[in-house]
Every structure is written in C-alpha cells, then in structure tokens.
Image 1 (tube, rainbow, N blue to C red):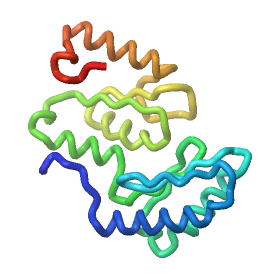
Image 2: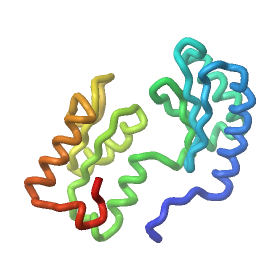
Image 3: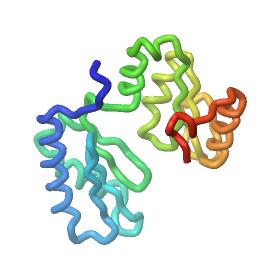
Amino acid sequence: MNGKVSATPASQEIINRVAERLIKKTAKIPHALVEIKSQGVALHYGATTIDDTMARTLALEAVGEFEHTLRMLPIKNGIELVPCAAGKGRAIARFMEYARYSNKVPIFAGDDVTDEAGFREVNARGGISIHIGDGPASAARYRVPTVEEMREWLKHQLDERVVDLSRRGMGR
C-alpha cells in the first residue's frame, strides 16, 4: 500500500464520459448541478425541478453501457455515481490493513446514505459508528442530533486525552 488514494485511468475516463453526458442532459434544467468528483459524479437537484424518479432516469441514461462499472447511490437531493469497487466501507477496511491502525478501534461518523457501508464496516470491527442528524434508520450504533454536538463530543474526547492539535499542525 502506497498510502495514496487513486482511481484507475479507466474508471476516471468512464466517470468523465458519464459526467459529460449528464451535463448535456441537465443543461436546461433549473437548479440541476453536476459535480465531478475524484471518484465519481453526482447530480444535485432542487426538489422543485427534478424528483427522485427523474434523477434516477437521467443518471441511468448517462451511465449507458457502463451500468456494470458504476453504481448509483441516493444522496440528499441527488444521485451519486461511483465505481462499483469504491465505497466508504472499503476505504475503512483498507485503512485498517495498515499496521499502525490494525490494533485500533475505528470511529466513523456520517450524515448520509452513502455512509452506511462505513457504519457496517466499523461495526464489524467492533468500532464506534455515529449517525449525525435525524433521518431514516441507520446501521450506526449511535446517533448525534447535530454537527455542533458531534464537534463538542470530539472536543471532549480530545480534552480528556490532553491532545493539543495545534502543535501537530492541525489547528483551526
């Protein structure tokens, strides 16, 4: 493991082609935004212009012949297309393969449907999984109502261990 995250050239080429198609399909739709990410592409939309069914249809049309290469994830007011081999659960598993993390308890917090695979992976490793906000049922073992409360919990954890992040170049 080289410590870097990367996309294979083929998957990045596919993501770029699908993004171009999606941009063309949504060019005249108000409040539709196509976000090209390093590991995928997302279609964000305003609920007044596109509904979930239309968003899925647009995404499926853009994916075309790459339907077995990319998978569709529902996100807040949108759809994200990512390589089938990608995911937060897989990323956590990769981190845990490093010797420096192998005997650690993983902690993972998130607020979206895309975080569920991460929650499941952390749970399987006996870690702490935290869903932030209200929302549908989650695999997370814990729930924190707001981002602010999550920050306070993290701050408390740091205070308890007397860790000064500013000395490590991680200040605010």
